[in-house]
Image (cartoon, rainbow, N blue to C red):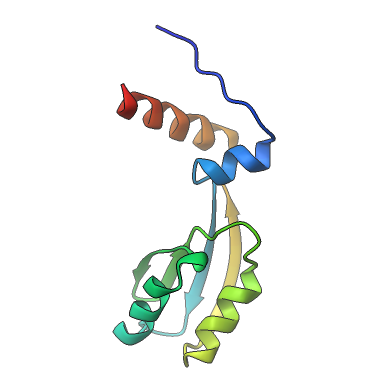
Length: 103
């Protein structure tokens, strides 16, 4: 096979390959109207929702507090929020999948 070479700092590589997420736990299901607003706020990077969890891959510079503030401002009861960083294994796997898809 070939060699995969990436250049840049680890934080940059993780951001570019989707290596970090913000996970927000809510007190209940998020209304569709709020989900629609989240989809319209591209910088927040809304990715998915389940009954009591929202997942984001935000743009550079977006803080956890920005997302929580948006949600609270739209009436969502936030139970907790955390940044989930990918491990090096997950980062490597994501890079391989991306490269295989591009072949």
